[in-house]
Length: 79
Image 1 (cartoon, rainbow, N blue to C red):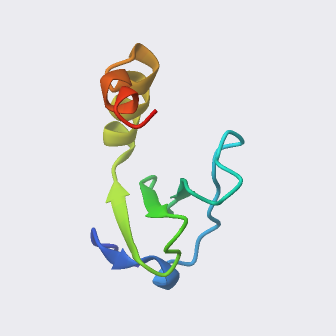
Image 2 (cartoon, rainbow, N blue to C red):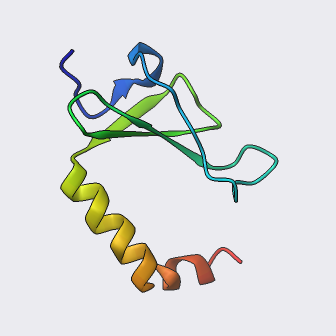
C-alpha cells in the first residue's frame, strides 16, 4: 500500500498507540508503525482525520531532538 502525507488515518490498516503519559481527555497524538518501516502520526481527537507519514530517519531525528530538549521552549508557552 502506498501512503501519502495527509492520507485519511482510517484508511490505514495499522494499530495506533499513544504514550502512557497521554492526557486522560484524549488530547494527544497517536503513532502507528507501517510495513515499510515508516511511522504514521495522527491527532487522537480526530482519529479519522489526516495522518502524517514519516520515514524511520525522520522519526529518529525527532525523538532524539525531543530527548535533547530541542522543543522544550514550545511547551513553555502552553503550560
